[in-house]
Length: 104
Image (cartoon, rainbow, N blue to C red):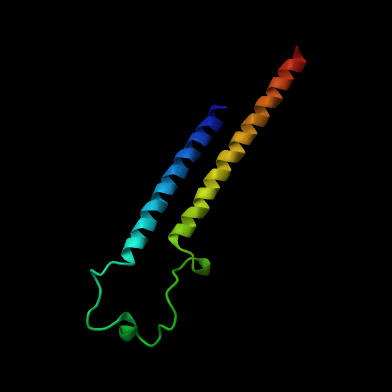
């Protein structure tokens, strides 16, 4: 029971941490789209790009996913872990109570 309670507590804390990380990244990416600190003034990126770049870079994740997509998967994994642990704990508690009632 203590192990399940700790698992649920850890999963909740992890969900909060992942949500905060996603918020920071989304904010960063939103601001970086407007940033001009490293912008070139003589040429546009399209003019400066080598001819071999014929499509936008999509990153190394499958199907062009981003770090935010990856964090969303992690978030759903923690939510599932919490749900499964709580369900298991409730079922085990019901089974125990039924056993104790039947034993009297």
